[in-house]
Length: 444
Image (tube, rainbow, N blue to C red):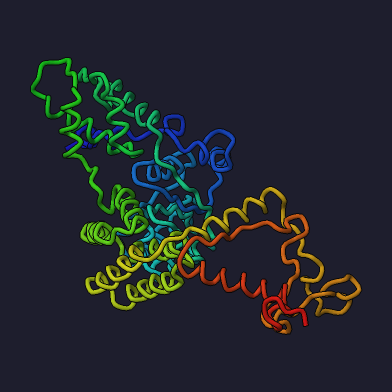
């Protein structure tokens, strides 16, 4: 079979891959006119980078376009089915190509988060020596899944799901392209079809094109022109890769898991957790989300929540699947049943807002470091009152002058209310020591 025949029989999504940066859709913040990356590509300059974002938003396509635009060799690996030996072979090939023809090599590694530490470390010398330019693609947060040593040597670019208007543009291009798309078949969409594909794709152009192709094939025996109805598209979308599995859209399920815990529904939380585990979700990802939830949604209403989530995360590392499902279930139930408070979450965001608006305000002089020579001459540390010398609490200013009196942390319920009440009582006693000493109504 010729290359032309193979290309013609490739899936629609593969046939419609952009052939140049001009055809590339979306991610204007990364590769739009005037961006650093666009200028680097146009100047033939290469540097290593990590592409982070959901499926179907152009990570692989952009890597291929960078290689084509800069005239570099492209070696593509998938961390799902490649190992250290494959990485070393690719690096050796890059060395030979550089020695023979001064050719540059882009090593594109899809799903790079699936490489373990040793496999990721094997890339470092080749990147340092500019033997290869690495482009890694991942759907997972690289700060969790990519070694810090590797991440520090790469520029990080976050890809966003395509907005509906751009998914519609991709579909319209496929419908009108007579060479690579469906233009020669006279396929059109009934009213609402374009919007339906944009909605069902959830920002993944590949999903929209797969559904379009499946629907058109189901009507292949019909006389042309073919008008695909909403029913055709709905039926095709069910057969297309739009399920909530790990490789496509797990975001809805993790969202439902978190919202069920927030709503104190332990049954729903455990169900969604089981759904993710059954679909092949990394249990470490689930554990990380519970650690965030413990502080964001439970907080000091139950200080044990964070410890429980961290313990579950350690259990996942120590025990592994399938047994760690029990540890995760225990933690999910605890977090769901715990009293809820987002006071810590609201407090830090309010403080960050003030920092952004007012800048980093200096602490009052009595809180500054007074331990070094010359500090006292600057007024640092003078007047500071040591709380332990006053029974645990003493009245003095802690916030910067410009923010004095500002409240960030506002307790809501549970243990944090009890802790706040204790501090309030300490303040009351410190403010009226004589009344506490002699009793109500006594003057001494």
